[in-house]
Structures are given as C-alpha cells and as structure tokens.
Length: 574
Ligand code: GLN
Image (tube, rainbow, N blue to C red; front, side, top):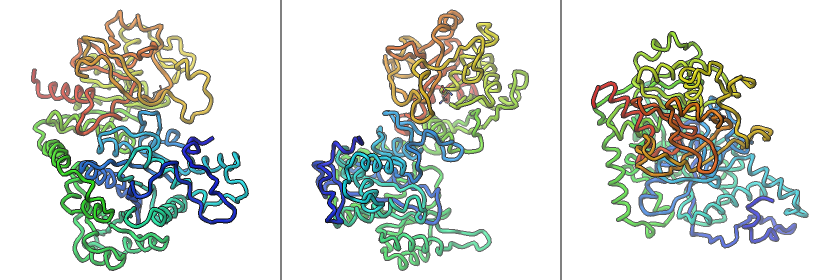
C-alpha cells in the first residue's frame, strides 16, 4: 500500500455523488503553507531550478522554512536508470533517492539535505494511483486524470508541506508549458490555487527573450506566446522572470506586461551572469523577494535579524568570487566528456574548493580511450592535478589506469571518485603488488585477480532500478591519516554512495603491506571507503561521491585537498 495512504484522513470523501475529490493528509492546515510554482515557457534549459533555488534561499535567509519539490514529467520511477549524457548527472540524496540534478542545486543553495519527499516523477504518481485503484480505494468510481491523478499530485505537495512544516513549498515543474507530459501537473496547480484560496499560491513563469545576432535587438513574441499558452491552461502568472543573454530592456518588459496582465514591477530581467552564486543578489536588487512576500501576505513571518546575519555570511562567500590570485588546471577523465551537466556536482565541488583556496580552477577534459602507459605524460603535461570520476562499464578504463599510474609515480595530485577509487586499487595491485592480471569483475567477469568484485549484498539482486548500494553512509576514519586530518580530526564522516562493486576484502592485507592506507571504512562491514598514499603530495580515492555533499559555504575537504595540492605543485609553495 502506498505510504501516503497512512496519512490520509480517509478516502471516504471518494463519493460517486460529488465531483469534489481532493485528498488531504490528516491534520493538514490550509493557509499555513504557501506555494510558489515555477514553470518554464518557450524552451527547456532556462534554469528554473537555479531561479527557484535562489529565490528559496532568499526566503530561507528571512527565517522562513522552505521546502522545494521537483515534479518530473517522465515515467521512470526515479532518475537512476537515466543516461547522464541525455539528462545530466544522477544526483543521490542521503536517503538513497536517485534524482534530478536540480535537487543538487537546491541542496547547495539551501545548505541542507533533502529527501525523496522533495522529488516526484509521473512514474511515481501513476504508480501510486494504480496501487490505490487495485486496493479498492476509489471503489465505485472510474479513475480519471482529473480528479484522481491531479489529486495525487496535490496530496504529494500537501504531505511535503505538512511533514516539513514549511512556510513555503517551492514547486518546480519540469519541462516546458505545452509538453503533453507535464500538462496534468499544471492542471493540478490550477486546482491547488483554487482550493487553497487567495494569497496561498504564487505562479512564476520563466520565459526567454530572443536576441538574434542578425537583428541585434531583443524580441519578445516567443515569450508572449509561451505565456499565453500558460494562460490558456487557466493559470494567470503572478511573476514573470525573463531569461536573456543581456539585461532585458524596458520596452520588452512593457510588451510582456501588457500581454500577460502582470504589472511591470513583477516582470523581471534574469540575464546571464558569470556565476549562479551572484543570482540571489540580482534577485534581491530587483525586489522579487519582497514582491513574493506581498503576494503571499507573509511579511509578518520574516525575521529581519536572521536575514541580516545570513546575508552577511553569503556576501562573505560571494566577495571571494573573481578575487582568486592563482590559476590551476585540473584534468577530468571521463566518458561523458562533451556534456558538462553529466559532471555538474564535480564541477561545483571544484568551484567551491577553488573559491575557498583562492584558486581559479580550469577544467581539462581527458578522453581516455587513446591513453596508455607510454603516452600518458603527453596527455597530462599541462594539468596540475587529476580526477577520475565515477562511471559504469569498460570504456576507457585502461587509459584511466595509465593516468593514475602516471599521477602516482610523478607526484601529480590525484582524486579518485567511486570508479576512480576502484581504478586506483587496480593500478596499485598491478604495478606495486605485482598482480599483473588485477581487474574488476565489472570489466572482466572471470578475471584471475578480481581485486574489485561485486558486493555480496548485490549478488542476488535482479534488475537495475534503484538497487545499488545507495545513499548516505557513515565512514569510519582512521586516526592519524590524511583523511582524518582533512575532515577536522573527526572519527566519522557521512558520505554518499552509488555502487555495486567494492575492494575484495581478501586483498586488503596485500595492499596494506605495500603501503596503501585504507583511511576510511564502513563501520560494521569490511567495505573500504577511502584510500590514500602517505608519501604522495595528495593521492586519495573514495568509494563515495563526496562531490554530492560539497556546498558553497562548506566546501568538501577532499576537493579542497586536491586543489590545495595542485596549487602547491604549480606555485612550488611549501
Ligand atoms: N561501476 C562501479 C560500481 O558499480 C562504480 C560506480 C560509480 O562510479 N558510481 O561499483
């Protein structure tokens, strides 16, 4: 039975007499939580998640409790089976939910952990409705898109509102207005506004202002039509955010305002800027945060003192942007080298670490299919450090191992993430321990020295959806090691995982005898989580994905360690 059902007062209001079907969680108080709904028109990729998370951050700074939710249109139950090349990286939450990369943006901006309640797909919603139908919860009724499917969407939002005790729930609808697959979400939001009553919802439409090079001026027609399409669905936007390459001029804003019934002071320019971390300031200057408070009538809930403190903290961080006095090149090896979104969290983590250490980090992508022991030096000649990130399958793995060998032997700072940790183990096994045939059974199933093998708990699993070793786990740190030092001499740290394979425990002694240190382990199982080489300037690998927990205000120590070592190597400082 769906877990939402426990929360329902009852579905007895499912009557064959009334058309008013709208399930509420037990104890739900109308008016306590307000909803800000963000939709995109004209095209996808406008940065709805960025806009939404920046606005949510401003509201959080004011002492309000905010909770975001992303509603995805696709039928997959989660993002775990999506190819990052098509859809951006798979972000993993502490509770193991595999979700859209936008959840990463929210966690970074809000500096807090989210959960599966903050992410929904059409697949989940349909599956919950079908489950209830089989259980007999809608007895006597034909189950329909409206009101049952839309009812399920509203139930999700209200459950989140209640569980998180939110002042504001930020609802980001994936895709673009006009997509068939998100149309029931928009209908659900129209119903939500009707049911929750005046001042409970605020609709934000993101749109795009074209500026064709051949014309040299901004054109608003596509934006007007996109907004009109939203209005045809019965939704009147309250705020329009105009994405554009340059600041949107007054005339264009006027046209949009007239066409959409949205007053000029609520039609904002959200033009491109150098860093997403400058967007909160841009939004504050435009007054959108106060516009929202007035619309929702919750000015009385804000705490000005908290806001002053939080804003000062944020400005201390943004003041460092662009003030870096060093510049380093980090090489990233990987399969999805042409799509930056596939490595979003790693790029973010490097940026956070760079800002913290006063280093501008340039990325050099390294396609490893062509790399071998002989030519690795050539490929790595202008990098100051390298990362071998996570991945699946066999492509380019030998090239990665050659890069790691070069890094180990030439004191080049190295950070291995998940697959990069496993490849470092294989390299060490082959070239230091003399296990020439060492490999992973993911790459060679019958390999004679399977130093990386499938986790015992994974052996009996069939199918590929949502069943890896997933989510946040405590990692026990070994006292006196580099990992222990960089994590502030704590005995334990929480990191996030997504893998099926591990170091086969029977080889651990062989590795340790040759000087490899496993500085992080699972508390109650022989699962190795962090490795390091004590005599190298910085050589670290982790079975986890520390990039997922790096935050602008709390840069991830392993990334800081890499950036620091790379800068020291380049600038020869002690
Ligand atoms: N393919 C490896 C495993 O399943 C590594 C996974 C990863 O890098 N996320 O263990």
